[in-house]
Image (cartoon, rainbow, N blue to C red; front, side, top):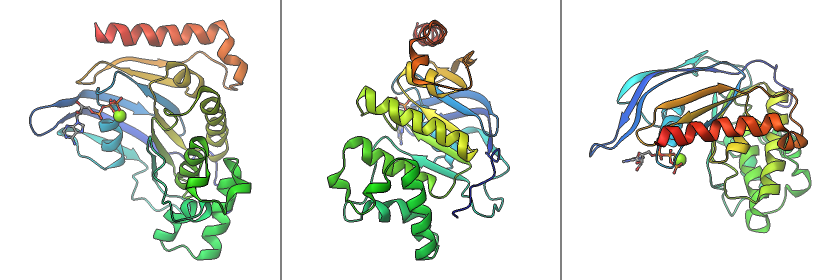
Length: 261
Ligand SMILES: Nc1ncnc2c1ncn2[C@@H]1O[C@H](COP(=O)(O)OP(=O)(O)OP(=O)(O)O)[C@@H](O)[C@H]1O
Ligand SMILES: [Mg+2]
């Protein structure tokens, strides 16, 4: 588990004409088609209630489409020596308060029966990667919100997922902390070679993080813009001040407005 995984081994996702209607008739997702290339970083944005979380849950296999299908390639059941197929990061950190940072981060490996020595080594490594190397013996109540989110991210990364699904993970954090976590996440994405699908309400976060942004209409969610960003691959913090960045955010903002019109 401590060996760095090969880069470029992310899972590709194909969403084909996916509809999801809940009992009672609420149509949440309305015929979405998406192809996500293995190893890419894609942000999903759209108004509250447009079905982003529903779509993410369907991709993760936590919910089922009413119509249409989702294909992962390679299929998530396909054995890969040291990597889990999918990990999910929620908006709240959902840590276990009675467990230390180390034991929270090691939990997925413990549940899959990895030996103590190995799982602690992997958890320490990933906690260091998210900047929490000094905090392994602390408890969640002793951490700030940003630190708790980093533990949650470490717990997702400890299995070396090939597809990382993130649902507004940094939404509750202040601007500065969110920016720093975005930087760490982008660096980890480079390093680990995984596919990332990232839901956010922040257009500037989407533009700074992702290579491609998909904008959804209000419920029921349809794709109103699928844009590959014309921004440098190397994302530095100062990019947020560049005119090219402002233009991308503007294009996303217009699509959101038009989608809601
Ligand atoms: N289990 C469920 N049962 C019934 N309706 C649901 C269920 N889950 C979601 N919905 C409805 O489906 C719609 C889409 O919900 P979803 O959570 O996917 O939106 P979202 O885009 O993630 O919104 P937000 O940005 O606020 O998180 C909403 O109208 C919601 O009420
Ligand atoms: Mg949601």
